[in-house]
Image (cartoon, rainbow over all chains, first blue to last red; front, side, top):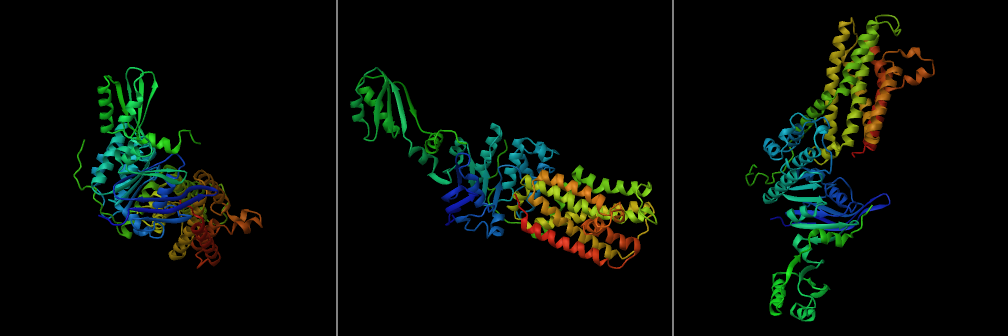
Length: 307
Length: 258
């Protein structure tokens, strides 16, 4: 296993004119799949592009695979794979032609035919890039990022605009990369994508990391979970509360409709149902709402639309 | 659904050798250029048409002697301008706009390697153009003089001068602006650069200024050698060198990759 982090960002600041895109960001990325989440304009792409060596930090330090992405670019570039948010291909090039070209720039590339088949690019035939569908263009960009057998792959919104099948194909590839020991850093707007793929999630807002952990940790911490049930009106909520762990709350929201808020785990569910059994209550429509990453995300970054 | 053998993606990074990367890039660049219809119009069709038309129809007074002896050197200069300046500026402008330069910048190919490949692709195209123009001109009765090495030197300096200006434009303006400006400049220099219209046709004062343009220096230098068998046209070589140095330095300084 590697001893140093895959990516280490310390106090990164990046400004565009008077606008501060990244504002003292700290982030340590370990092996596996890391998802970078955040609203539009949060600084995701700026952070990733600084790691890729495209942007020079205004202050702070960035190390990728232990290297400075700007000053040690020549050493770093062969070891990383990059999928840009869009473009990156000659408009007159055919998909397999471009992929073969990128493969030629690497010493030990993947089998291009197998990759073409796997990502469903074989049907593109002689169509040039500008006439490919958005989904085909995305898959080509993904293929170009992995064809050089990199140690670390950056995927900037890899499934934006993909149909469900293509999205699955992308997810499957990311999982295979992970199990073969490739590190993946992806930015996304899709919470389910992060939940499905990521070992680690960093939520960025206003140029800072505001939450970082595994999807489970993030869903558990911060936001609390809810258990609801309906029964006959006027149950003794105070008695229920006594049976529950100390950090829980319980209330009758409307007559006959009850809500317990706290750390919802199997133990809590058993406690509530056995309390009901003791009191001769049949809990109708009992439901558990675990917070999804989306709830956590909205809670942390606010629900209002941003410009 | 195909299953993938575990270990398929196990990292094994590394760039291939520089000569191999640059050669691959040059081949791709040349293929893209030859596949592009507008580029072919500019680099092949227009110079050929102009050469054939003005050699066989007496539209422009090219002075004493055969028209083709005046025109062939001018068309060679035009061919260099069309590829090194107009074609390269437009292609590079759109590559910059569509993130091709950006994507390649994160590949193992260094930036200078990319520029070397672009230059190689321009030179390959020019060789094809020179062959084509020479064959057609000879068929039209052209009788060239002078030292071929001097001609080569002029062509190389002209390529450097036009590449610098083309890349400066592509690397600083928007792709659409580059497209418009590069075509406009091509047209203006075609008319006012001694390519098909002798500079003597312009009033004095204007003529001296036009003579300082890279296209005028190239077409005049080629004409001195190929038509009159001159040794080294120092003034023209000097003008091209200054444009080359200034243009390439400015392109190096101001070129933005995205």
